[in-house]
Length: 318
Image 1 (cartoon, rainbow, N blue to C red):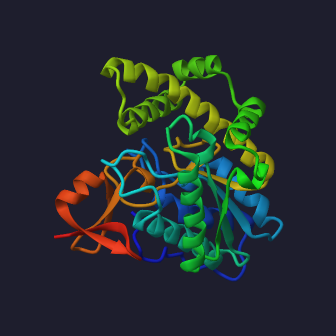
Image 2: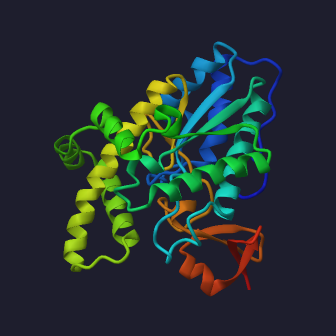
Image 3: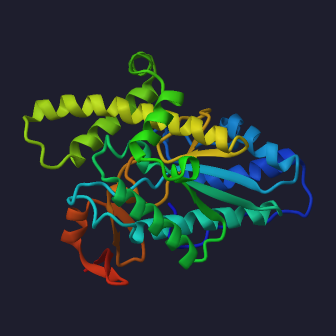
């Protein structure tokens, strides 16, 4: 699992066939793959779509561009997170991604860069996070990238597409142009195991993250199931918008992805399951030097709070 250590790249000869170079680049991603089908070890041959995407750059000798939808905003649940701004979890994750791009440069001289496609505003109304909190999160993410000297990374969000339009209008435009219908998603979930797992995972997150709900538990479940389809609609729409604005990229995903999918699922830090992210958790720094994502309430029981620049950052194991 990735830690603060630099991502290590295999040594490479000065010249190699294109297929070998593409495989060497994909080999850097495989140890950090986010997936649920992990019983059988994955090989580069399991990912023809990613090899094709990488080859589009290598054949032209261009720097590789990764796009990663994610880093939306912090969960609104105080049981999970330390606040609404990025903390040590985001810092470690961004450092890992920058190291990964740097490692690509060791096997492929033009190197790589990554666009963090921050998607909080796309579904902020559905996950009940205020737009000003999402703005503050995204702005601090960009500031963190500058402070840490993470020169391979940049942030892309709805402001880059629609400027200063009201966020409700931005969301409506994206939804109208790109989103599939709920009926299409329901039919897909019935026949596709991955879509069903995504729907159930998002429903679980929404249920856990909803605070101050006045109704019954069953009413909350019904509401969250409805909102989950909305989140998937907007997520698909955001993916299509990214593809339109950045048509030539290697597409990564923060969600678990099966072999052969158009996107490659990537893990950022050690976590108890394949769904935990820095924006749904806090970080515990263990005595052995490792870092683990977990609920804030759990980390609080195992460590002492550490401040960075006067703000809650992470927990240090005691």
